[in-house]
Length: 92
Image (tube, rainbow, N blue to C red; front, side, top):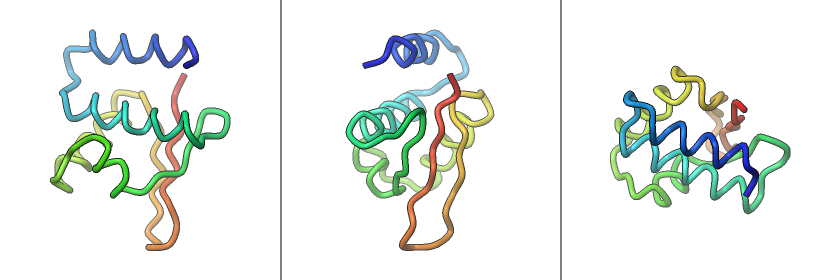
C-alpha cells in the first residue's frame, strides 16, 4: 500500500469529524482500489462498497460518502445508469 494512503488513513483516524461509517466506507473503497484501481481512482458500485463496509443503510452510505467529499478525502462522480459504476477519485 502506498504511503500516501496510509497517511490519509491516519488523518481520517485523527480527524474529529469522521465517523466509523466514513472510515469503513473509505477503507472499503481503498480495498477495491488496491484490487482494480487505476492511478488514484477506482470505479465502484454502491452495493459492493456497502457490503465490504458492512453498512446496510442507503442513507448512512450516502451521508458518509458526501461527508468524505465535503472533508476533501475523495471526489465522487456518481453514475445514474444501473449498468455503470461510480467513479471515486482519491484526493492526495
